Image 1 (cartoon, rainbow, N blue to C red):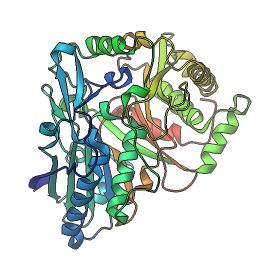
Image 2 (cartoon, rainbow, N blue to C red):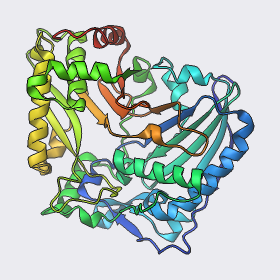
Image 3 (tube, helix red, strand yellow):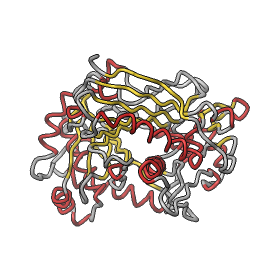
Length: 438
């Protein structure tokens, strides 16, 4: 077989009754509209010790619980659709759009799940076979698709493709947690009521800003220009995951103690300084840009419900000089620049938002982009057969993209770094070495 073989493709039907009838369409906020042209995010949960004998039971549990949870999360059951008269995209939640159900793929693989679960994934194409391959030549497209893969040597992978317009990392995690809760216990977490109404994202001229985002970031709608690398480009990249324990993080924060860096900033600054160094930018006085998301739920006036599932993060940018961040004080300089950017964003999270499309970063050797959060508890997602042994994000495979999530153990953080292969060994050696003023 040499890879992954699809056994069956079925549809999970969404049962709307007796739940309230959802809106026929979710009009995307301007924060959602930034991601219309993005490929689906692809999440993978790896369960290395799950026995193959339990596979039919796992399939049944996942399907039945998905049917039950989707009425609470109806945008995830819809389709991202372009409305020419409005010159923008919406999530179509009409009966006709939802009635087709969710694509559910059952597959098997002769790959070794333990190799895939390692910190470094040398064969990225084998890795991405574990999630639904949702290609988008043009809208409409499904928001959600699911794949469950049984490994012949033992173990199970749950791959989930979700379009970014339906939510940010926190919103999507809300969906995963609620689905897992029903699968495991038969009920959603007590007191949890998801909020999908985009009307809570209020900002002067927000409707026109959303249309402008679509015009600038997705000018060919309904045709989509996906941001995925071609197979040829991806062949030159490698991704490695680094597990940082509490002691390591504490030591990094101590190095910048006069700046009082957060866990996120101290880790990010270490990454940025190391990347700039291994890329050989010590003599490059050009700009070095660092991009990362800031959750705006608590920053809005009034604050937005923490259970809001849509996109509610603003892009934050720190600007440095390449040679300085690659120099001996690179870590401190990165800490200071990122902290200053966070302070500004916290005070005015939407300042200059109309110009965000003009600030979209091209992936060059002088750019590092961060995604995720040190507080995202993907490892807490228990569908009923134990917490995952490994969680991975299969998308965002681009040079200089870094994804962070909260680790399995308290106080730990997982950092997944994608770089060109010729830089990875040097990065790993420097990144994990005893602290020096990179």
